[in-house]
Image 1 (tube, one colour):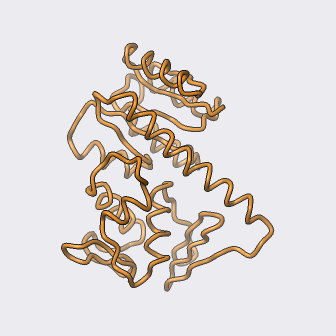
Image 2 (image 1 turned 120 degrees about the horizontal axis):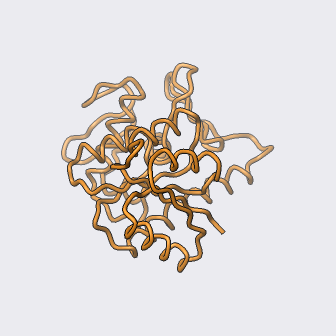
Length: 233
């Protein structure tokens, strides 16, 4: 049974989510503030974290940033009552894998959780199946992407990528020179279950470029094809 930690200070939302997690076969645990939340994230080792942004003690952005800095790769879905893009962008920048704006339907939340857990499980299974075999590696100039170990290095230095940033980089690299539309990337990286918009692709490309040392609008590795999408040079 997968364990899911929700860090949420609103009792009604916390109890509603815990109830629906139990109804869908998950073990739900909860924290009421940021300090308790980051402590439980470290000690309980959940399979996924639902993380509110506006929290007493320590906000969600800081929690996400600290966990990623520690090497914690647990998938994180951020919850925010704000509709401003900056909150979503910051969450992705600090290492979140997805976000949902309040109010949200519990059905959609469970669908997002299942999609993330399925991808996470598939990645772990692929790593187990390829253990002891020759690993698949893609090299593009100074960029080296190890598909099996899900690691990427730029000029010999490891890149700290979120789950979806790596998946996006992988898809672009596997289709080097081919133009990928935003809809194609959304479908391949986020899957049919994702309820977001293609703007999400642009946000992730922006931060991938930043980590690759590329210019915000154009770069050595990821190029924009105006009106269509992106391609790996």
